[in-house]
Length: 274
Image 1 (cartoon, one colour):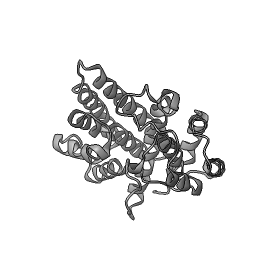
Image 2 (cartoon, helix red, strand yellow):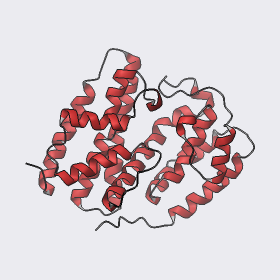
Image 3 (cartoon, one colour):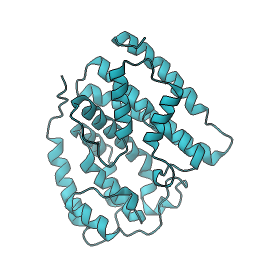
């Protein structure tokens, strides 16, 4: 029988945390290079789960919905473990979309069968959309809100994960699954998108400079002022800006970005689903 009450879902959450912990450990190996990637994803899973829960509480969601947000965070990257096992990469373009793969894993192992059908549909939608360039169109306000929430939680922690590897001086030390090409300048089309405050196609990244600028472009895809405030408090945005090469056109993009952040943080966050 599906879990529907707050107490029921609390019990299920404990079970799901135990299941995910055991699932991640099942990919442990004696290969230290592989384990580096697995440990990064284990830690990332924990952070995103916590951030999703905190953001849901900030939005004053009902306890049941806070628990659903936690479940989404817990399973958002479940596909990463099979992805790395099969393809030895976390690069979706060179392997398989990890969100879609995650949904296959969850369905195959029947992990979430105890959720109410409407809750399962919501969780699946948010997981599937968490890594896409844009959320697919929907008139369902709950689906849209939770997809935005999970995308913000994921991006907030990705800034932490990638911080040590963005500075060109340390890029060579990055493990193979986060390395980009070693050219430092930003491709001209990426410069133009950045100056206009637009997103770019991440699969088109050609240089290390492109990789840096993409992290700044993400700011325009962050949905809540709360998330931007956390990123600014942690200093991630300014650290990335400091890693940009001296190149014509980038200063315009940085000025636009800082103005956007200062204005967006002043707008109150609203859930608008009840």
